[in-house]
Image 1 (cartoon, one colour):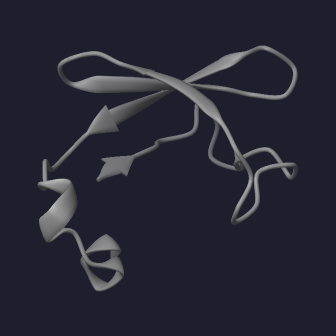
Image 2: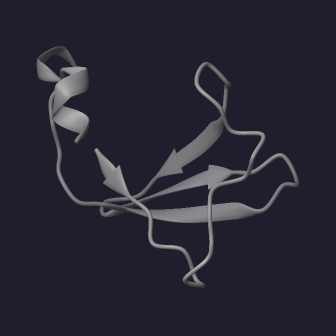
Image 3: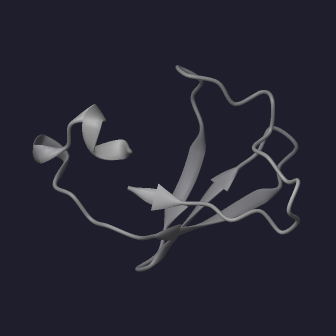
Length: 61
């Protein structure tokens, strides 16, 4: 599970990111980096770790 804080108060995720869209990312201990369609990387902070087999969509609140 991750959390993203935009650099600016009005910042949002790219419009081209929608459910089902494939993305590229790399993972560090407390961060993961998602590559945007324009080859920019957005830094996400890991706020909670959950085993993949234990994760349920309702956990993503």
